[in-house]
Amino acid sequence: MVAEKYISSEELLKHNKPGDLWISIQGKVYNVSDWAKVHPGGDAPFLLMAGHDVTDAFIAYHPGTAWAYLEPLFTGFHLEGFQVSEVSKDYRRLAAEFSKQGLFEKKGHVTMYSLISVFIMMFIVVYGVVKSESVLVHLGCAMILGMLWIQSAYVGHDSGHSNVMSSRGFNKLAQILSGNCLTGISIAWWKWTHNAHHISCNSLDHDPDLQHIPVFAVSVNFFRSLTSHFYGRKLKFDSLARFFVSYQHFTFYPVMCVARVNLFVQTLLLLFSTRKVPDRALNIMGILVFWTWFPLLVSYLPNWPERFMFVLASFAVTSLQHIQFCLNHFSANVYVGKPIGNDWFEKQTSGTLDISCSSWMDWFFGGLQFQLEHHLFPRMPRCQLRKISPIVVELCKKHNLPYRSLSFWDANVRTIRTLRTAALQARDLTNPVPKNLLWEAVNTHG
Image (cartoon, rainbow, N blue to C red; front, side, top):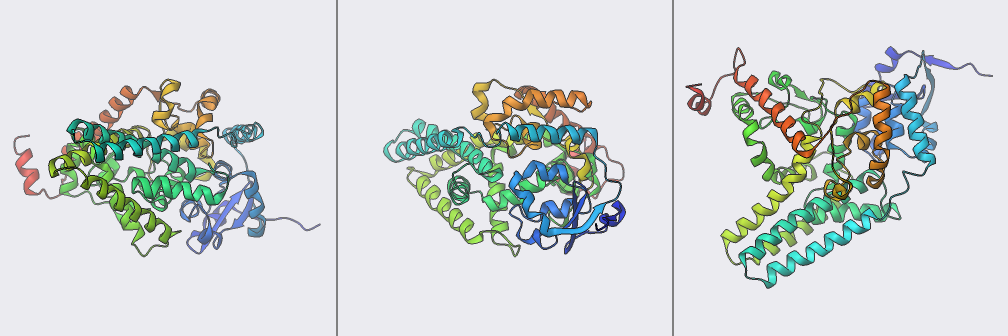
């Protein structure tokens, strides 16, 4: 019998750079340096968590069939002194129990109903724009288009996390159709940023969903011009950023009304960058479909004022979704640094906030009002999240971990309060950065 070889945590931590990526899963050490290049979820999870035990994250993101892919990557080493926390033990038991119950596979008919509603809304929008000359009808169509985009985005989100169709091919088609073709937002961009967000939930320097300098800052830590390890650049807190952040609690909702423009820009920046993008051509084709039908639809409106109204109204409706995503994280706990694999459960509870609502509103929030449940079990179909919520609540109570669930109104109040706190601190900083003329003009008299 061959004696097992061991490696210390300190030695494992040295293998955390591109081209030299090692991880531990249940105490066995794997070299994922080459696998990271072809990993379906991209290389971001490995770059963030290499050098640590990542068992909980692996369980969260992968079905049981994924374990078979690990053996060829085994280095022959085991992690010295490997131990599992009580929280992790309970989390893994819970994941195994949900798997036995088939909850990850019981998807219901949510996707079918969502797609049907999307195409019905599309028909109404096109018919109303083309056949009617009423300004009010056109305004109503714009609002319906906004709701179409919201529901389509939920389908893209669901299909991005797990198979919602009968095969991987149809699932990819659902992603491209619901994301690129209908909303103009690339599923490739979404996967790139969203996987990093889930892994590094509310890390100020690693989670792209919190990195909105110069417009927003949810923490005074951004005032130190943190380096974004996701984007690979410094988030400069200069005089312009200070000006915007100082009034962010006033500008939050107006910015959300046009936040979609930023998503369009981010999509184009990624697809036409030198970065390796999976299915780049397919994503670009999908984006071209959107930028064909949407401008064509708008061109059927009789004049430019109505066209402007139509675009702005449709964007403003989608602000409800952008606001929701901010509520889920902006006022939760934040930290600086990489996530550590052995506190997976704790990091997810710390960085998320649920929105409480009646079950009939689940369609409106796309299941993501159960944000903690979704972060703990990202492969869980949205129709099962309400069912598992009480179980997650009890587990949080058992381990004295936060479980925050607020009404939509209270979550808004808490988020604005967080933004206001940072805004006031931005105004009162000692050793201020050089101020521009706009800053001087507005703040001369306090």
